[in-house]
Length: 112
Length: 113
Image 1 (tube, chains in turn yellow, orange):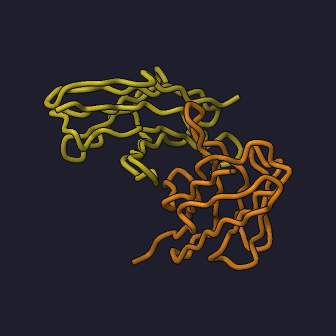
Image 2 (image 1 turned 60 degrees about the vertical axis):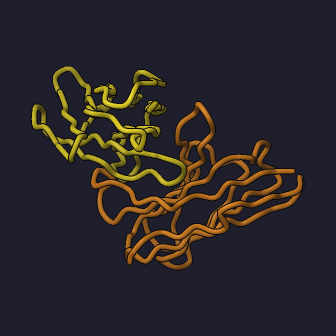
Image 3 (image 1 turned 180 degrees about the vertical axis):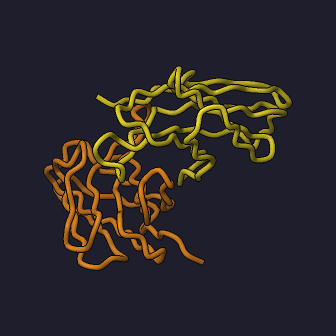
């Protein structure tokens, strides 16, 4: 059965810290892995990763995929209070690539 | 601007009543989805539709019903058969394969009183 597991489930840091969020997956016919940020309401898309070892970057956020070890990490450098959110990762399911399987998310709190 | 509109944002329902949550998109997306989000449980798929007049059950379809009469619209009815309807409901859509990502609506928070 396909699954996506995120760790840690929650994390609190101080502004300026660097954080690393983890997402491991088991998907038989792996296609891609997606990262989302959810503040109060709608999740917003951050990254899509398909190839191993290629870093995706957007400002202070970056992400990389390791297809051999079946995991991805999301890095946030110089954290700000506005980074406080739940970070979700997901992957298209085997056999139905229009359905996503979701991790439980990592709740990140950034204190001033 | 294109997007997904969910309404209402907050909804209160008495036990035993059916309620319908609206989801409209103007992105010309083929596929639409309904998720339920509860604390500590992540996103759980209720129903999805890949084309007009067709829809499939997700992981937790019991007590819910949907219709897809128009490409733009995918309303969700929470029936009185749903045992624990209080939750945050998210609608999403995608125009291609899911690995291109979903676009989400801003959600409806349903509370049963």
